[in-house]
Length: 82
Image (cartoon, rainbow, N blue to C red):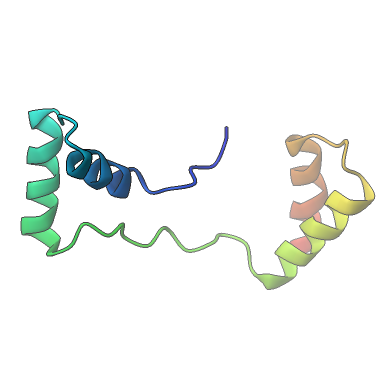
């Protein structure tokens, strides 16, 4: 999965300014968000489930053993954190 270089909402705004058509459902969705929140900005995501110590352990493990799978990392991380 590649990261988006620009927020899709900003891209839609740019497209509309250029004269492109936008589906009615998209406009209605954005209007609803604007009415409910007062802004089209994204809401902050969930808080991380890992604390600072776990992130450091995981980063260190990733550097030492980049070939391990997610399940192997989980097996390493859970006993280390207690």
